[in-house]
Image 1: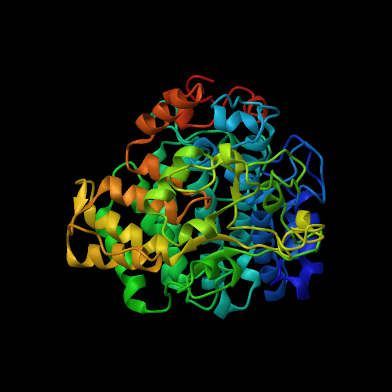
Image 2: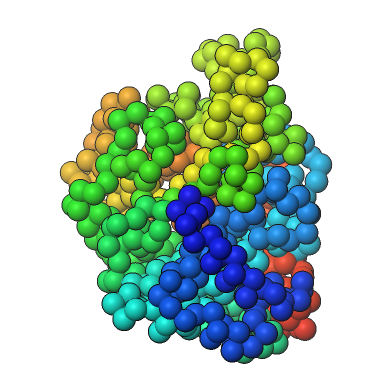
Length: 506
């Protein structure tokens, strides 16, 4: 990662210490040989800091074009779009072949390798965070509280992803295994015991509150107070009983602080990295095999650069949403190739999805005036950062919190936040001064398209079943209510020796 170069050797040492003794079937909680091995590593503040950087390394994941094994390889967030965007009405795979195409057709099973890798990657993050918390006393006294808070922020981030994708609302089934300490054995029941969703959310909230209390806003590519506030606001909106007032207060704290602002040019949000709108980002480095990402190249199809035929292909109903509400975001969000008249909408002149690709993360070096290398010479080793949280999201969450599940909002504060995002897109203020839930969902959809937010938005607003059912019927897919959750990977169920129960319908 871009901020790790000067101590990369320590990360390698730490990761080796953590993983060297692990059986390939024990990825959920990869244990050192003994506690003595960990004690021997964490001897100084520098060692603990290296361990914290190692957590970010797990989030960053391994570029599939560096290590192409189809087995689980800790891809971190690099497969996340498959589990989120493809399971919404936003995007799909270019073909029907392979396990990646299962997501958009709602036929993912418990043996899906990408889902398995993501599940395991999130627990890898949790394991590394727990290790830091366990050995943080080796750090300088003045750093212990903030190092602990940073590890807990990252643990909360991983659990928030897991609980929304795999956690059942039915307490008899449970959310996900909640592991808050390094297990003494790979057979520890905690690794495979699903606890109620509310219990997992309570831990997430506690971890993020500790991060807010002990972190400042020094970083964008590491945990910060503002990032913890923003993610906690989304947690409050997402938990089984939403805390709208808590979310509203957190968003207003971020707004009032003044540390973040919308970029004037929407394009700069993605191509002027570490800008004023970014609140938490996972960094990558162009042309560096061990620090790059591969998902940008997989988003190409018309002139294919990735290993697949094309992923995150734009759905027609998202094109319609951009036509209605995209403003100047449209040209930045997706791009068209070719001039086949049958693929162009006669009324709008915009491309049909068969000819449209994601443009927010075009690989570094992209130059469409160069016919030989339109995506540059190293598209598979892309350096585009992955934005986890940005200020526009906070402004729209502010509106959602004010709406408080009522279906509309018309306060001055709600209109101010909503119109700020619209105005940046070149659109006029809300016409009637009343923001409906449908208008807010549409605004979030086009503002945050391809940023892995749409599926979670549909869940949070309580319309996922209806929207995705209609989308499935329209496209001949097989969505049912069970598909609102992903299956617990079979490999984890098998490792648990009967302890870990499966989600309904799988």
